[in-house]
Length: 241
Image (cartoon, rainbow, N blue to C red; front, side, top):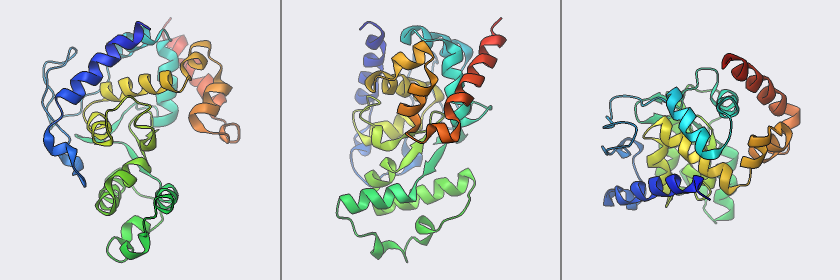
């Protein structure tokens, strides 16, 4: 499929540029910046957030053969009307899921009980702002980095870390690096994800219920996910005229 060729090239760039320091765990989220030349920007800098442009949306939409308005609709539902994938430079939007963290730990035979006193914030419920969520994630990563990454939803498309392979990442470290580098990277990961999960056809045909079921889970209808997608799409489509 020709639309995959560019995604494959980007994956190769990501892995060949990945420093050896990223190959071990636990890792530090703040270290996931590397300065590399990109086709759409000359250089990345760690002190700024690299936002998506309309040209980014158009190019990726063309490669996926899907409407820009459809992609923007997904972004709006997952990241809000600001369309932002970062809370600060190098810090993507994250949503750490404690129940998932516990479930994954149980399956892998990891005893979390011995960490509750050392990292109480990880196991404490309650609403948090993004800085607090990020701190909580880093503490969870100190317990088990891979487990914490997989139990977290990442970026403007809120893709679960457990889907890192479906996003075309070479490793969990590579997934975090790309999520932490730019919104364009987040968009590319989303593109690979919907290709590899066969959700692209539903986004193309604007079958919002089928897309929502696969992307958001079986409870999508109760949340009105499909109707919100449809409404957001219609609004963005109208803005194109």
